[in-house]
Amino acid sequence: MASVSGIDISGTVRERAARELRDRILTGALPAGSRLDLDAITEEFATSRTPVREALLELSFEGLVRVAPRSGVTVIGISPDDVLDSFTILGVLTGQAAAWAAERVEPDELSALRELATDVAARSGDDSIGEANWHFHQKIHRAAHSPRLMTQIKQAARVVPTNFLTLFPEHEKHSLDEHQELLDAFADKDADRARVIAERHVLDAGRSLVDWLNGRGH
Image 1: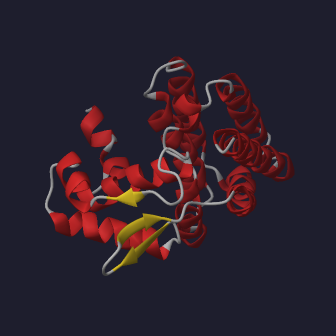
Image 2: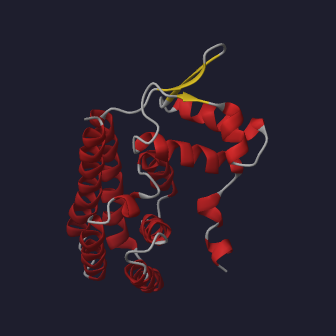
Image 3: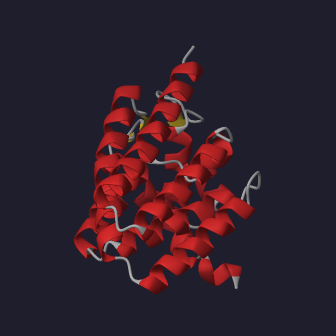
């Protein structure tokens, strides 16, 4: 049932195209100033032009590309400072989610989180770890029982490349250790500890991405 579990992360063609192009821009694979060819993207995603146009429009609203009638689509990119700001905002939101989860998590949700954390650890070194990690964090956000906060996190989390853990394998062990620390904080209903761990988890990731982008710029 892997296809079913992956539905919410794969989404529509528009979402998939937007996410893939966003990932390439966020990781510097598509550097600032590069031009995007609508026909080439349409062909790559084996789709019609409409969802690709919509995906590019979405990226233009996020300030990642510029869409001009004559000159086409140009990558604006994202500065390291913007990356750090975005991860700091996401860190604050995920810290709040973890704090509320520590206070509000149901016993069955905690059991499910333990299973998901085990699944992430089992995929260490494999490309599928990214999706497993996404499901684990998604479950924490749900355990906060705040639809409003979930909406804010979904917006803010766009800045995290979906292939983060395969891009930064050195983060894996650190990440898995912090997952265990989070589960312990939830079990102890320690909201303050959960907040600190979750916030640090995201900020460390942001710093890694900034270092990576700075390295690519040289």
